[in-house]
Length: 433
Image 1 (tube, one colour):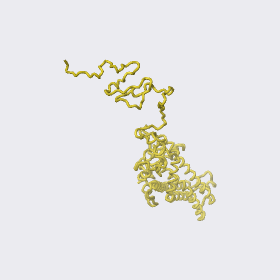
Image 2 (cartoon, one colour):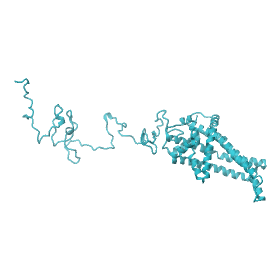
Image 3 (tube, rainbow, N blue to C red):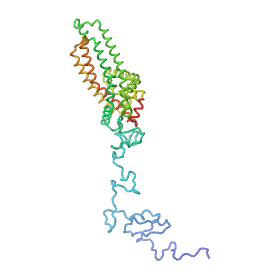
Image 4 (cartoon, rainbow, N blue to C red):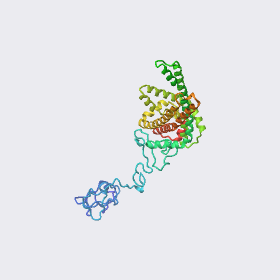
């Protein structure tokens, strides 16, 4: 006797095959282990010589051969009539995602770099976090509002040339600064550059003892004039003292002009009186650093000229660095020059070339215009007035060179700052104070 209920006659006995259940053999594949362990009903398997239907519902837990064709698909093998031909995977085709949504937008693939809405790195840059190189996303052309407010960097900025914009971007910002500020820059530089330079030239010509020395040499070529040392000391005193005073007035103009360029690019109000007052506040500090830079360059000139030229280029950013940052301009300008040697050297070389051409034109006009008045033009009132007017006209011809020098150095400094981190005209104008 047993407590267990009698077995169900319709259930096959474990280990035995029923009359209607053929045993696994050569004509029927064995049931996969996953299907046999699922505990649910078993779907009939297709014959071994027919491919399975991957779209047919699979039993719970089915995987492996139950969900795949029995044989790998061979494109060269004949297929049954009406069978759907599998397509080869095309990496260029858009890939479908659930709901029609893709990680890169409705097209399924990321847009081309530089296309609408797709950021591109500057020249030589890497994506964010790559190799420690700064990278600034740039919007496509026609999308100036792509950057979030307060980001601090805008490729459409009127003063800061974005990394990768090249010489054309730098030149466009220089031209824009001149167009915006020429009405203020011209009188500022006329008062602080042209007039002091003309005055120094007139005074130097007035105390020039070369005519007296020539007369004395004609009488006794082997003897120095009796007033040689006195005349030489007077001439050197006028030149050195006048240059120092001229440098101070010049610093007023550089500071005032930089203030105008930065504030106009930021859209802030400017005025001639406010610019000159700002220049007076910054003049003494800028003047001191300019003197130190001049001594370094002069020392380099004494060492076979070439070191002096090198120092002049390497320290070309000292003035803007002090105006905007007001700390360690010599060392900061030196590092800035060597960190981006090719870029800064090219920009400064173009500025220097324009200044040299403008100065040569002014010098030729002055030299040719003063010849008719002789070696002693101040002996008569008429010749004194004439030579003074010629010197003043030559100095005015050099005015464009002063504008190019001021604007070119300020825009170059702003570009260097952009390579160090996000910056815009508003921030630079605020740094000026």
